[in-house]
Image (tube, rainbow, N blue to C red; front, side, top):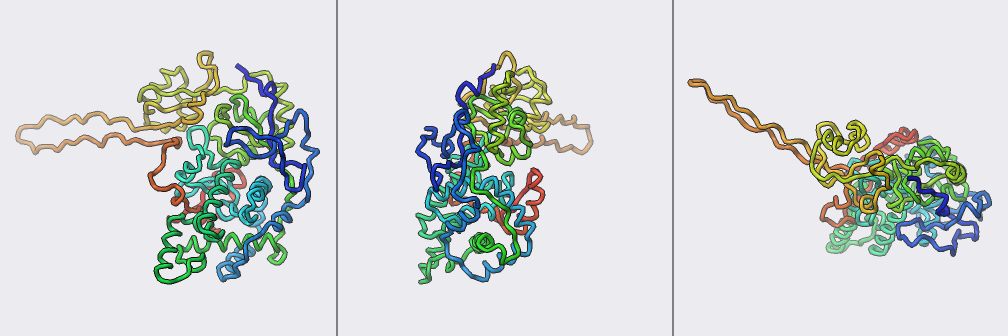
Length: 472
């Protein structure tokens, strides 16, 4: 059954409004606290082509907001030299940032934070949205699973909001503000973002006990954390005076790159790409949080599209008269094999295994949520409960009992032992999947060195999944 987007007055959120120099707006936003905080614009009544900015150069706006003092230490100089020796790498990461920097700068300015903070994803992820560290930190801001849970970033079968551009940016800035309030300096806040607030507190206590200062430069820190702030300050220096280092910054216009569109009905990712007339990799770059081929209305989701494509999407959607979604979800009532579950649900076993990422030989545990094709028996959208709490838990089947041969009279007895029983494996990242430790203190940066990020960055530009090492 088709629930028409156009009938609900397609509400569009732009990451900016041309009404004033600070891009503020008095227009109310959605009551949902997890919604975009950007200004509300209706494409039926307004044209994004009419928007303008107080300046046509985003780099100027960034420089104007710098507040942190240069360190001018050997470590900072070393990091600047490293970047200056790799202009192609710097240019690629700067180009990738063009999709996100305007929105991040807008949020940083709204909080009166130094605009150096907007450069932090260069250090964390090189602005590669699908990067994943060995310690399972993901996204532009490299949130660990427990830290993401602490900041209410949903991690389940359908989406991982640690990758969501809007949600993760909001959470990262909340986190950094909390750390700055706790430690009283942005240098210490950044070090705590990398190493954990608990570790910084312990380092300060050790210095205080020894009669030493407790500022950032006086603390004994791991190598990664010691290099972390100098890396950020190196990017600051490059942005401030690129010509001095032989680097040409890409042109970044000071206006919104994307539009955030409310999802009023479940809709297939493939259909959004088709109706928006957008390359699949561009869609993924803006919407990396979606884990499945369907976007759920009951998850309070938004689709990010370049604003020209948002207008195309709206126009094509009005003409579209077929079902918007071909997928729904069900909960498995008892633990069973994929073959058994497929037979029970009346779906193709290969489709069930592939769409849910279930390896061969694994059983689906009771209570798990699986995605299946919509049928006349199950035509509706995915429920709110499933959209918010879906998890997929798998286990290996119990091996058959070992049959011991009967002892032969006079022969040496044969030792007969059963094989190991099946082990349970979790998939899909259910929301309760976190340790009991303080999530904030667990946060560690995925940047163990710009060299490792550079190695991953070139493959990431083609949309393939990369990885950034994380030291423990």
